[in-house]
Image 1 (cartoon, rainbow, N blue to C red):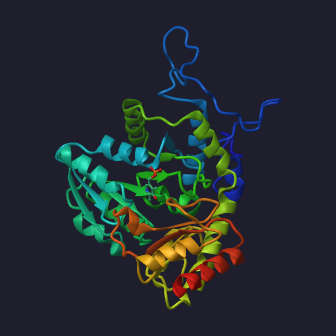
Image 2: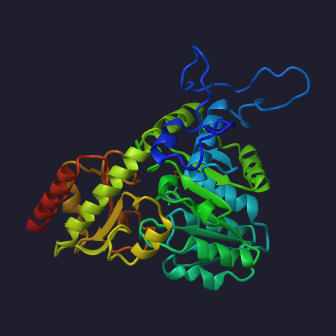
Image 3: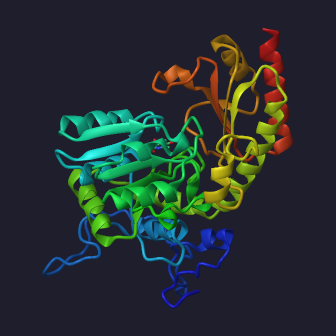
Length: 384
Ligand SMILES: *Cc1c(COP(=O)(O)O)cnc(C)c1O
């Protein structure tokens, strides 16, 4: 370990993940301290940190924030601010940065709740421009913008854009750059190293991976940007519970095992689906002939192209029958969990997808079992 307790940036991802954010060994203390439940701390005399009042800070957050920072930018100086959901983190960046009269660029195919933030920004007099993720189309609407928001790979369309290229163009124009890193996780992509100012994610998905915690975070290098996000958290007062912070930190120790298994099975599933005449619009960034593959391979890490496979069945009924016929897969939203889930995305109404569009999230089941279950369910759905 480095003198300051962090591991060097040559340490392997799995090794880093099991120790990230843990304290130095202290005899007879637990190797991973439990959650600290405290609304206030002993604070004699003049108030001074690190721990004063529970809305501002908590030692269990500190451990988790250190861990996420080590994964997002190993060996680098970063600050991370955790939130009780991904939307909490996204709102904190956009609402702490954008002022009346500013222009902000969002993807038009990003997470389905982004339009809610867009409406909020517009009521505050912020101009919002959108463009698709694919083809780096956001480049065309950058002039005069204050902040560029990138989501790559995008959810649920799985398009990929060139973070380095977009970040350089945005910085040339004086704009800040935020990347939603939810789908990739920090083991699959390191946006700060590709030029982003903020790496933002929902930890509800693959990062924590058990479908039992909501979490969000913002990691940045610039302490002033981090301070603005932290002040937003204190102001909005929407904070993560210590139990959730602890569960999330505990989950990080298996992050590499989970994302590697999920990526391998997702690719195997996508390859099996490619052979099916009833499947169209198949997308997975790991498929060599996927439109996003070349760029994904260049900027994502370790073959970790994520756990999501998306595809379209002929119509809504066929999709519903398919979901009902699956034995090993829960019909549920979200993604990244250890148990596979799938849903007909069109049921929410927020994404521009066909009625038969399925977003499939691969869990950590045995690959052969999962692929067999999916193929059997497709056959059953086709029989009507
Ligand atoms: C789920 C998700 C979010 C929102 O996260 P929550 O934890 O549900 O608030 C944001 N971005 C992406 C890409 C997501 O998939």
